[in-house]
Length: 104
Image 1: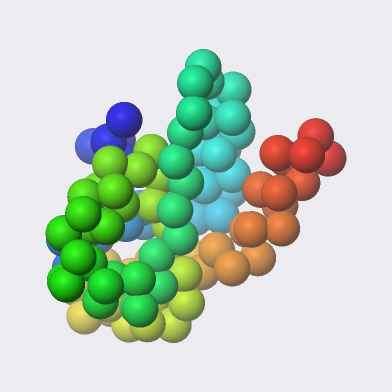
Image 2: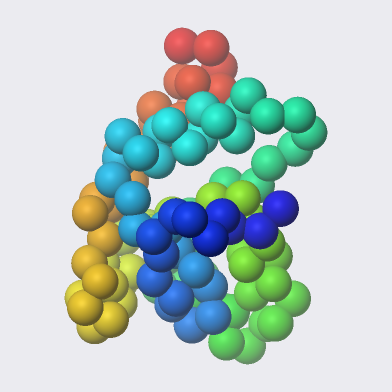
């Protein structure tokens, strides 16, 4: 599956990164967990985005992920440069997605 086109996103070095708030992201994760088959959730930081410039296979993996979320201040800066700020930095979302995955 490729990132849903109906999700607002910012293209950072060839990777569409969702511009959604924490609650929306949690809802998307719950939807992915409830779907049949595997799903790919990725967090992209500045280093990951830079790796995409040198590694087209890695870039394509991220482009095909079901959901790609921003991670860290480098991506926050990229959003501002594109004049499309990210509503949240989902660092704290990781613990909650783990709890959902574990049934908590």
